[in-house]
Image (cartoon, rainbow, N blue to C red):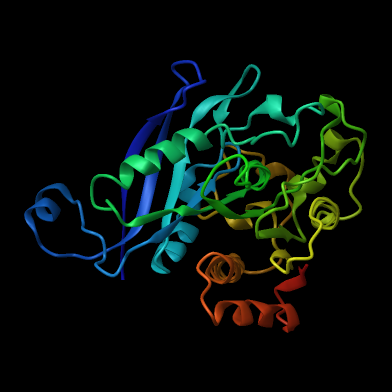
Length: 327
């Protein structure tokens, strides 16, 4: 199978130059044909069997280069999805320039939280997706009524918090790794407060039992977490009401905060806070790619066998799964 990608650029309307441009990488299933466009420009046509493809938008963690999520983008593209990663260098927090997933800090304030999305890059990406669906190798092939938001760390948080059709038409599901919704005391929340999610769409929440970044960042939330997975588990318990059998929690045994990235790169981010992973990274990523793919197949693509395959993990004794719940 030939997975290809191309680049686009988009302007974030409310951002100030030079920090108002994001660069997208669009992964899709291609097919080598040998035509002139392919030979001269490297532009490979889409697989003829690709049609009505749901779109996954992956939000990176702070200072995590989007290329470290290529392992997941390729895996999902192999399933017939179109996957978007992006790079945006901007003032992530006042006075701090970083590679950001786009966090709208104003929407995290106690008086505004939950009234709108926190993903500030999302409107520009969705606008660019409409252009991609109107021109080029993916013209007419995208199902923009089936957009899945996913991400890692801060990127996973904005994905989960922005996953509501009330905010954006076409959003149908969300997933995140190494993410929780605790409110920071700096913004005025009481210590150890877990904030609610929109809770209207299928959600997959994944955490690692060796996530040192979460464990060692608890001071932001005015507490000390009992376990690295405590705020993740509490987010599943308190931020999602359940009752639809489409919300999942998976805790991965031995996974740390950066088990979700490949290759590991330590010159940026905060790897010095992390704990060591106790399981092979390749096996951890393979498990997560399978679970995320099945989650999308079951709850977005409505593939008849996907839900039963996913539910088998709920009952399995897989040594990589510390806990798996559905509600």
